[in-house]
Length: 412
Image (tube, rainbow, N blue to C red; front, side, top):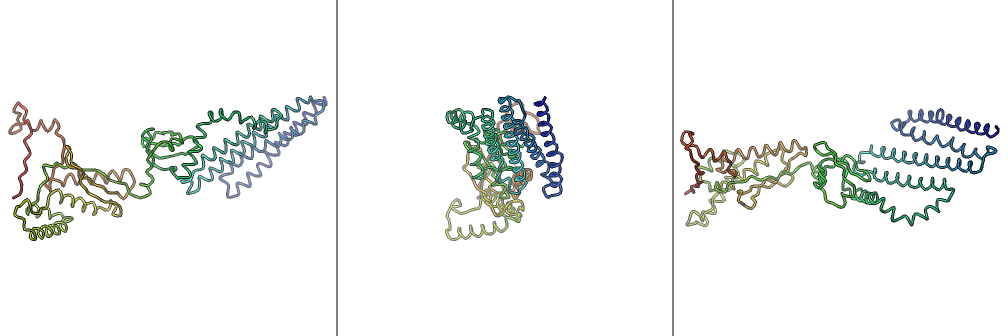
């Protein structure tokens, strides 16, 4: 009866301490936090304080159990060891919750996306849990933690094998953070893993990418170090996105321009200064050298004039950046025609606006090419051969007619 009464008194004292800690002290702390600038963090701080409040009744039981009479020493030792385990676990949970709260507070900074610390917080949490596990095991065995740590040397190979991915991810997280390789919000492209979208989370083991089709691709962090990927952050920060596309010119449509052609093209206001300058330059050269053959004389071509028109047209567009590279160049001709490539930068990085600008440019150029006597190369299709097989008046002749050869009449 004396032992039972002492145990009831000990439990009552622990319950009273728990009630005072949670109902009076904890509520008072939360009330003060609600009136402070840290009102938004009051819920997280309350959860941490609630965990810590469990330590007080546990300490009372751990200390008071030795005062209960007529208890076996083995039982007293077991109770004290269990109380030590509870205290260690409670402290570990409180520390990890504090680290998580610190990460949430850090993410509210404007520059948090440039230097995420979530990976480091996860590493710290892992170390806290590892230390807590060693201390709890030492408390249950009534042994010094140093004795257990000395035995970890023999388990190093096993630990390296078990935590291989964690070690690789930790090293990768440090390199990614120190070299500023990836930030939350970056558009990255990693075709090997079918990742093409925005980074939404950077953790210790994984990096989450939300693709443009709204699917989520999870990439192991160390893969960003061991494999190549494309980060479009530079494009976004520059304020412009590159346009690099070619028109395939039918080489049979390229020729010289005569005076009638020049007078016709002078209708384009963006070409008037160019045509006047080039005509004066060509006429001056021809007067100076007096070539005997017409083929030896310098003359303007429809392709060169069209190239000058495209360049002037792009410079006149307000949605093409004038402070970045702007080229209209010929590439090596092939069996598909002569590529005339446009290399420019739009003044926006918004995908939809960029595609609209690019489409408007090539819509206009494809429509204006016949004015220069140029044709776009396109492989013939069944519809082209069917059109050729029609007789006069559109009636079929009953047999296939091959396309008429293209002839080009040279200017005299």
